[in-house]
Image (cartoon, rainbow, N blue to C red; front, top):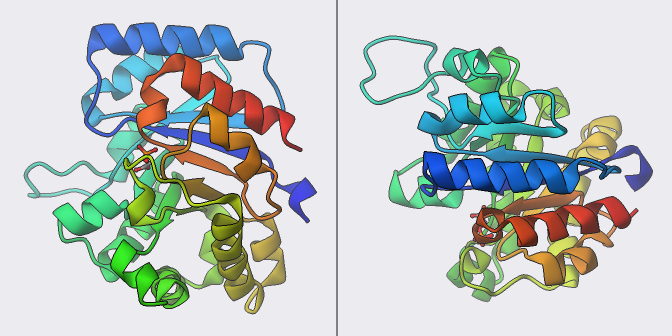
Length: 256
Ligand code: PGA
């Protein structure tokens, strides 16, 4: 089954970068990946740097995207950025429902589902993030939490909507903490996610790329990518370091 899915490595830059730093980082990634193959690579940059990403990455094998999108198409929504604007700058992906948006900006499952559909309406591929907190894991609620987050995006739009999406499993306790889920811990949740979808539509489940996120780096990427249901990574901190990000991409290319 996993043969039909390519590995995907996405950098989530969060609120980091500057024109000067980005130029150096993207230049290093382009050079490092020029002859790489067997995986897809992308960076999700802050909104103001989308034009720079488009200028520097067009024609390269790295695609780009944003970290959030408005649920609305346009209008009086000060500070918001809609999917059509992201499309204008050549975005391929947009992250929706990252745990930092859920926690710090009060995004709930219903809003994440609406953002996913807003992205898809513009032909963007949403990377839908799910994951449990440490308290939820400790109380044995991991599966229930992740399935509830997943069901919330499936319910309004149908499971077919996941044919045009990527899912990222990011345990909140592993994000930015240096604590990675073990390959077995991650695999077992990825398998739950795929099985939940397979009950409704086996083809969608088999084709869905499910990324792992949470303290992925060059040294732990390969063991994660060897797992049958881990189809790549959503990378935060290590995506700001060209050597680390390239090492993760190389592991993706070598892992199948
Ligand atoms: P991290 O972040 O790699 O720094 O843990 C991952 C994420 O938040 O997407």
